[in-house]
Length: 316
View: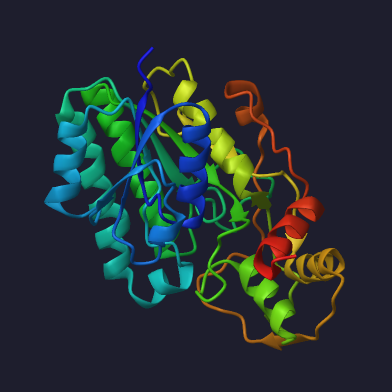
């Protein structure tokens, strides 16, 4: 049997490279497309083909149109909520313009391709609903990042209804794990790990009581495999093909820091800083639909995941 041909945009990033590893372990032939603006070439699996291109570019569209891919996993994005607040035009350019370029190329390829899209469950619902958030809840994002991700889902839903595009949208909660960048603005777990390694205080914005739903990157990668193998869902409204990926557990930033310190066996002070614009107060997703529809549940607890993540950064 010929191995499935899989393209992963953003496959040099911490989530994308973990997804690439999962598909290779499953026997797929994997191509990674990444502009290396935040991803690392060293994280691309050795057996994967690599295309150095931006998702907004004609080169990316040509790669997809001519690549005869069975699966396209679209993870490349501008991922920083704060950057989207500071520069919404750039966020729109990458997260909407780049995504539509990828979506249209899949349609134009004429192939029977399953597209999985890395959307957001952590930023799309906003603060006007009570967590844990169901997929059908109203969408009222607090940031341009969340708006752009949901806009892309609307484009996917349009292409499914009008052009029979086959897709699944995976709405990630807050993903963490090995390979996450501790030097960027996004990724509180990686940043806190670096603070512990360097013996520096952890910065908590606001009172630290704001909550997030933290899901381990290996569990998210497994969800992409399940979504790629899904029998298919009829086209319908935008939420029809969307699945939340999280743990259905709210964890405050302070509790996260305390749990990570226990996992690492080290302690550092917590320092408070002003609240940042564009951040939700509470975020947690229901995962019942993913359990039923994809057969997915998270396998890694927060305590285990934080321990594995810290050890990956510290080399222990």
